[in-house]
Image (cartoon, rainbow, N blue to C red):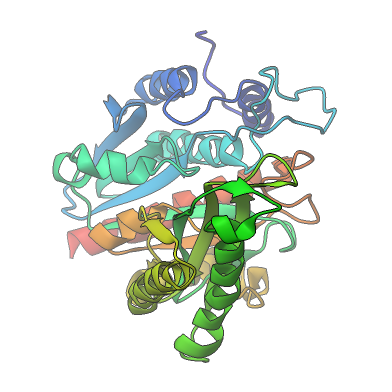
Length: 388
């Protein structure tokens, strides 16, 4: 699949659309990773592939500077059937770049080329192309594969395009910026039987209804009113016929918050409610609580640095101050648990929302976003700072 490396802005738009047409799901990003690695090598980067299964890390050293900085982009697509009807729409049925990771990858590649060409920095640059951001913890997998031990950095930065923010506007959030997320599965076990003889059964449907109602008290009565928390029952499965009481019912929930202590409090409260409500009906509740992504917490110094980079090189008018903390989740949070850094947002304009089959990345923001990464790296690894 080798092709000549992109050079102009138009080349990078073509590359983004090429990636969009060939989406790959979590840990299947073999072609995307190969293409990224090929371009980075061509531009003079030291490249290591297979980090966290299908991740790629490119390193470029320049000058005597001792500081190091990383910039991360995600590469994976979603299991969504695309409905845009665009000429470059997905050619892989049931797979779609519905979150703009094709754009994020292209932005970082464009910045990579410019930085390799100009080399106006002194220190070590790491470019992290991460797999499996969508619900598969690719960041954690890379970290477990020794990401920051093998490729040490002083700070790490990332960005996400954001529909609803004007095209090309930058937004920065201090502290908790994106929510933690946990999937919870509750299996309510009763004893089934004929719907006409409920007294001979232990009805898990009624027990589940009581559990669902009681769960609503967690946010309203157990969590500090000044803290954000979400407990949503999104799936209920039980029974096959209207006149049959089933043996069991399964509930699936999403739990989100901006506070690690509240996250743990909800886990304890939710488990107790499910078990005790079920017991009051003579049933049992088994609670499975696999941990998802933690709260994404932006570090204050690095966030202010990222904000000032935008202000210096793009102007105060390009900074959007209306964005509030986001209840969606992002596995860049794992990287920010290990290293200082910040996750910022870039306006995608009036596009369809993320994870929507009609979504499309706004190609107009590619050049400016790449220029932002170039300026951030140059400022962080400033030559005059290194000389001092």
